[in-house]
Image 1 (tube, rainbow, N blue to C red):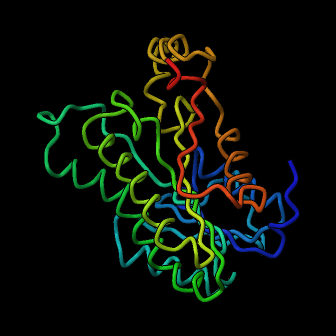
Image 2: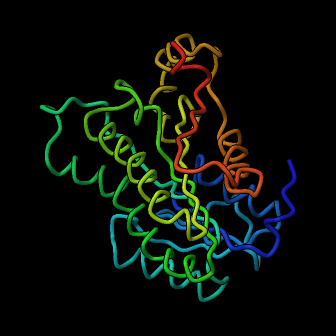
Image 3: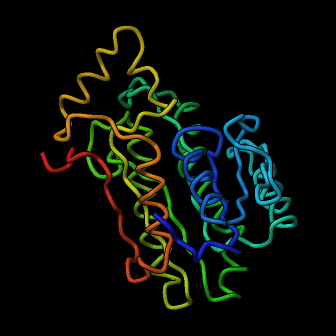
Length: 248
């Protein structure tokens, strides 16, 4: 899959140290883009330092640190034309009565509010240029129950609503926003499912019509398309990549 249009563009990715975020960073770099990568974890060995990569360490729940990381990256690589709001975390599949306020606030800050902070930090420059693309990370938990606990499901539903409103408000000014809703993706975030004899991972695969977990690269490939000119008429929507989970 080749997208020559990304050469010379700057892409910003949160949650860049592992899983889908890491695959997105690697994919955009392979397409010739410059990438501002943000994560609270140190730069992983899978990412080789090059002049096209600016890796910033920041916790997306720390607004000041997140904004500072974005500014630092922009100062080196320029203003992003594509943003992948990918950072996120699970909540242990806990129902509301088992979810304390601290957990609720942490999940929403990580999964939802970080997208708001990143978007508002880069949107003015995009509007000035009359061009910008957002690919926000939702989940099948943003479309149905059962993909997470109360906090995670609420956050992912909200991401879909936020993305639709973002696109509606600014589409006429050159902005495009969509979100991806992954199902079972084999990432470190889901490592608990593979622990021990992997019983949970096997059950998830058996309940997925495609009978397997997907790899992060499959989501990154979808991201490349959604952020490209080929998807220019796709606005304010959510694209599942779930092996048929929602078709059941």
